[in-house]
Length: 330
Image (cartoon, rainbow, N blue to C red; front, side, top):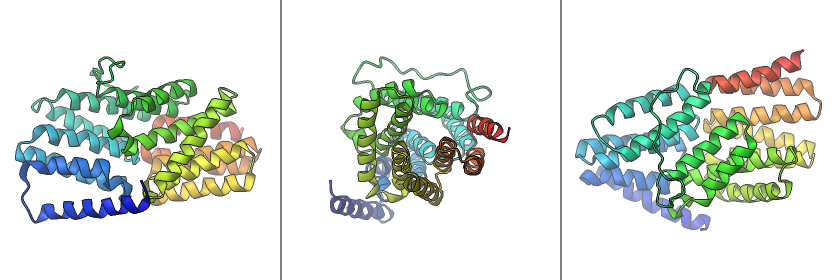
């Protein structure tokens, strides 16, 4: 779909949403919030705006008695919070609040989504050492194409493996996630975010000399896909595009281009408030400078990465970067 078509659809959708203030649409309001923010708004608005709107949809759903749709908004709000780099501790508290409500408002599908997300957040904070809970998601038969949870399960499994550096497992889960993304999911930001992680992971696989030919195809597809979506969603995806391009250029040893693209990714992530991806771009730049034997610049970027991860609330990433800094300082 062209930029013009997306722009036209966005204006129509925005005008329709603005009418909510003039007309009482009652129980339909939660459903409108879900469809607008999950399908349209993220193309032209920051993911952070979607978080607030999903929370409004949640409150409206419970107020009007549309509990199912209101609760449906909760996991969309949490999902956007994770992908926009919100404070991990804050996300954990919000999930706890929603899980407490689900003791009264029964929704097994919402509970399982939230538990999947919670496992990801817990791992990113401290690998679950002090933040895990006994409750685990019941994901059912992952081979069943009608299973609504399997895409989220595979996506979050890939994300966890990516941040822990498990490249082969990340590749496996990424391919599973992409293969089972349905027509609705293909138009959601999570589909592109999955491709972003898949592309970065493929670059790491190329560096390790694993599945080089196939991995290069994944990289090209990821760059093309993120470049396309960044034309209509600059706020949410330009930083991701620049990081993919930086890492891709680093494979060809284009020094000047790589540095400029790393810095562009860092600046774009900072502008968008994606502290986790700002840290990731700094981390990748740090490793780049380690490979080209520039210790001073590597230290500079790793120190920036550490501060970003500290603000995000990820102890495992802070500890990981600190080990790299300690090694460089020896």
